[in-house]
Image 1: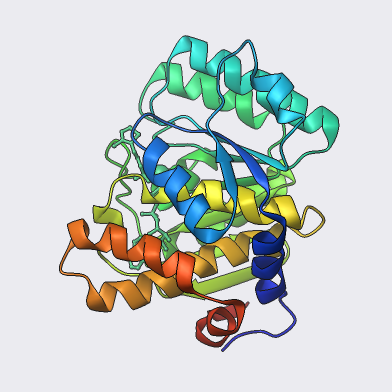
Image 2: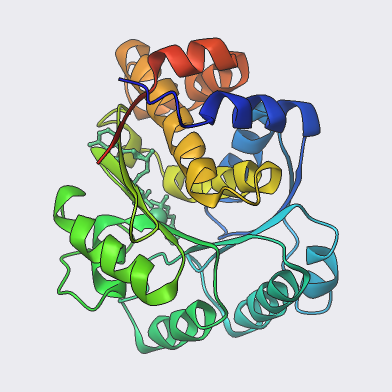
Length: 268
Ligand SMILES: Nc1ncnc2c1ncn2[C@@H]1O[C@H](COP(=O)(O)OP(=O)(O)O)[C@@H](O)[C@H]1O
Ligand SMILES: Cc1ncsc1CCOP(=O)(O)O
Ligand SMILES: [Mg+2]
């Protein structure tokens, strides 16, 4: 079911060859798994977030990723600096709006960050629905909505913000507001591994760093890699504990031929 017009295998190969530097401003829970996912997949993560250096560092990176999971005032200042510097330098940046609907502090921060024009927004179904102004049933950082029910919200958000929107869940969906793509695969164990979505957002950064002119295709590549490796590992893991190390091994071992032959994407 792979659409051969999508250059996902080429983007994976380019990432391995170029080993892009990705500035990951992520949350305290995700730091370790996100860095390990990028190293396993073939990128070079740097968790650089302080206000004093986040903007300067963005100028060195191939892409920047910003995640509001464990938010604090100084953290927002660093995110602002990095987003501004990335946009000014034409460096793609990815926003993960973790539980942005939960408190006034988060709502204010996400409104400011989205106004700084992210290249890509990646979230779970409840996060994307709430960002588009729809009623959502998220509980803290966990989605309470199906990914399918968030597709219209993702499309509306992409059109409003002029960016790529990716909504993840049992079936992933990526859109630029005009072109839309479904990605099948993964495992129901994945949402039981903390910060796996946050790590995925960082991998989106790694893919768009090597394909800055193709943000939709880069996003499909990162989500597709998680879908293919997650499905394979889901068949072998005993549960969330053994899933994580096997998943890192799978991200490291897969080559672009295996990836493309197991990728199930549908251009809608
Ligand atoms: N029920 C499911 N079946 C298969 N894959 C899933 C399922 N739920 C989540 N995933 C996968 O887990 C990863 C994280 O997605 P998600 O849980 O939506 O994000 P978050 O961790 O931000 O809430 C994605 O790769 C997604 O495809
Ligand atoms: C548990 C938790 N609390 C604040 S951020 C975070 C991690 C969320 O990770 P994900 O969005 O991938 O589920
Ligand atoms: Mg999340």
